[in-house]
Length: 463
Image 1 (tube, rainbow, N blue to C red):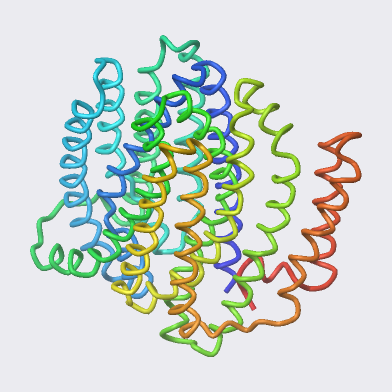
Image 2 (image 1 turned 90 degrees about the horizontal axis):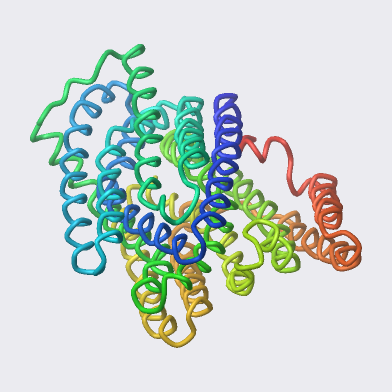
């Protein structure tokens, strides 16, 4: 079990650095490109993310699950996964280029989307799923840090004004390529260079296992980024830029969700098969961690959204404050959806996982199409939150029966910690809001650890 704690710590360190680097990229782009240019970049990144999710299409989740359960399958999976994902990347890039000509009328916007589309192909070379499956998260962390460090360096030197807009996708592609090469070399040192194969049996097995997860991930990614895309298509680039600012602050917080996904899936997959008696306590710890880390943050963001947004993005992004106070509640909903949803994946109940995603995304998109034209950025924020709320409700109904989480009185303490933080912040924010945030956070953390609601073992998801 030490490896679980070690992997969690590696991922935590890597994600903190990665998100910090990405955060600085976001700040630079927002300030140097202005709301319109930042909105175009947000639109391009969102469209690119749709292409990337097509290249994954549930394949990486299935690959992680198979490698975690049978290390002997590694070579055959890697040799077949690389050409399969590369082919999907080509198809996704062609689709993005076609969409660019249909959705945009000026040549620069079309070229921007096409360049982001080319980055999709490069991302198919990343082997982070391999190191995730064999639980060597230090390589996953290294890849993420290298990507964003390269990206930040290029943005810092090359993007000075809206005239440099087209440099952004090229800088991102360069950062991704650096990480892909590092992971390929690391894999080759331990396992030899991949030898691309077109094994019909493997491709069929991967496709059969992954298509429910693939469709679910496409739907999920579509609605998570639809606020930006919808605002760019149905409203203005400026509103898309304002929403992107709030959206990026939210996804800086969601580093915890990424760590939970990466650690929880292989661990719960192994224990559902080999040690079911440990699952209730493992699930209870995961839920306490999710609530203990997210609820106090939500309280702080709601109370301090104005000064934080002004400090990070500047006064021109004050319109992002109101959607941020809504979007931040996506954080705890997403963490809990991950716990219960990935229990379904670990139990090979992909069709139920897909059904839940399809219903939740349908609700979110219907809400978006009605709310965005009428309410702009606030409509997009409420639609995204509604979709995740429905998602959590559906995942709870199936995942609870599998996990049977051990819930104790300690589960109430994250709510008490959030209330304590809110009282301290309200008392001190007019005097010094950064000091208020630090004092409230320390008090909340102290309460959680003093009452045993969170422990060092819980943070490693270990008994």
